[in-house]
Image (cartoon, rainbow, N blue to C red; front, side, top):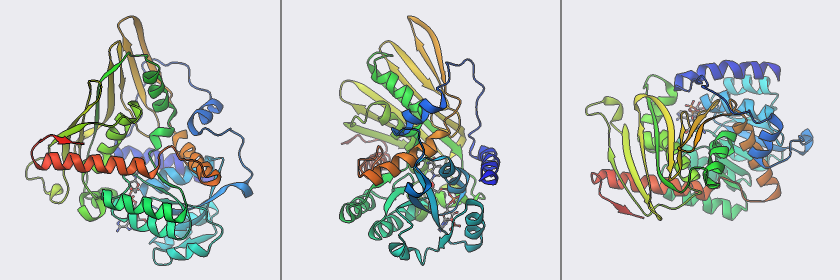
Amino acid sequence: MTSARLSRRGVLAAAVTAGLAAREAVAATPAIPPRAQSQILSGVDDIPDPMGDRMRWAVVGLGNFAVGHMMPAFLESRRARITALVSGSPAKAADLAARFGVARCYTYETFDQIAHDPQIDCVYIALPVGLHAAFAIRALQAGKHVLCEKPMASTSAECRAMIAAAHTAGRQLGVAYRVHFDPFNRQVAQMIRSGDIGAVRYLSADNCFDANPAFPPHAWRLTKALGGGGSMFDYGIYGLNGTLMMLDDAAPTDVSAIYTTPAGDPRFAQVEGGVLWRMRFAGGIHAQGCSSYAMSHINRQLVTGTRGSLAMDPANVYDRNVAHRRRVDQPDVVIDTTASLPQFSAQIDAFSQAARDNVPHRTPGSMGLRDITLIEAIYRSADADGVVVRL
Ligand code: NDP
């Protein structure tokens, strides 16, 4: 356990490759104490389940994110433990199994045998997007609950097939939108809900980084078959989903978009390198967002209301998100929880509880379908150079 925790720190340091470096705080509101954080995050009490009572998970796809962030988070969870690994790389799986104390390993070819493995209740899918639907459906047909990484799948049709498979199997299907379990994002959403910045009028979200085709986790993202789409699919989806979270999942009435893909850039032969989108909501609320694979890293959201604004920068990175709340009638407030890390284990615990108690998960398959459907509308508009698409 200890070595895995140490290794987590090493991997977190390496996560700077994604441009997710922590910022210096300008000032800080009092940090939420750890015990309260887990309650806010997961909605479960903070007493760990005995090991034997925890939901048993298989992790599918042992890549950057699964190994660097989610597997260490299982060690900190209160409702879950890893009992199986699924990988195309047996040597890597064996090494991780030894480090994490996991007894069983499957390959993609033997994956369906999990149907006969009573030591697996839930399956976490961290494969390239183009493989999400096939493996989620196989896991559901094997009678397991599925938490699938974002974006849910390559098309809305695939999302619907996943939801139908979950319905048929009577199992939970969740999409791993970790931000919904992040104390910082939940605090900002609560401030907006409470009217702290007045009536919301305008939101913006920017999610950009510079894709490196020589870096394997970026290479598949630049292919249509495995990436599903481009910057909007992989990174812009955080801004889209986060914007809707800040609006309590309001439904937009129309959308328009244009591509910002740099001309002649060989990285973007199959998927878009950038998109600018805007959406309109009932009540005079407008939102816009930018996603790009061809810019320096940026990850921020702005929510402006009639009495003030909340500027989140960064808004939804792994370890430390910061917001400035500005109002004309009050001094500025800096919201800096300094510890967004519990979002990973809180997400795992919340899904484990939803699966065990058969209660709705906070980020269900229907949310993933909604977002892919909106991105398809964004692409339809951008394909027609910005025509307004009614929703
Ligand atoms: P990686 O490329 O690092 O990992 C993907 C893993 O999938 C590989 O290591 C490999 O594992 C397995 N795999 C199976 N088939 C293929 C294939 N044909 N090509 C490449 N890999 C394959 O990607 P990430 O870890 O960055 O992303 C994985 C998932 O996690 C994606 O869905 C991504 O969107 C999501 N993600 C979510 C984040 C979040 O904040 N929620 C952040 C980053 C990613 P093995 O060798 O074990 O077979």
